[in-house]
Length: 216
Image (cartoon, rainbow, N blue to C red):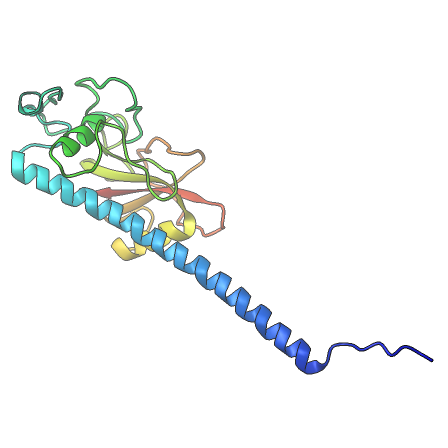
């Protein structure tokens, strides 16, 4: 007597395919929701730091980090130069002992002592992509950065291409070299900010990362 081998019916195969489709759709939807959350988080970084900066300036009539009265206002604080320039780069090493020349690190120390930012000390916070979020005036030498930024800027590094494009589009004009938000293609994590703006627009390759800077 022959054994009859039973296969799947068309209905059973269709049900399996529907289940697989639902699972894939849920995974893709979940990934998109995570990306959207990271975009909102990165936008909030820029907005929150701007609010803290304006709050400090309104209360003390000085720039955080550059505040000449910080040393007398708070015990253990270090006064800045009071010249209207935040000296130092956004990605400066702020893990050691702070000095009067490290104003981009003192920025965070002042904001934290004033209660505008959580935590203690001068170390920069990190964004959702483990990139440094910091401030500086112009480029690393204090001159014009990214093709026009000569004043105080907030920079956030290690941002994936898809997120960087969305942030610039939501907050500005979506162009890498113009507006109040500008981008710089990275070749290494937390890079120094260039003087010249990038000549090529954002490219969503899935591997590109950018540093975004916004004027204050």
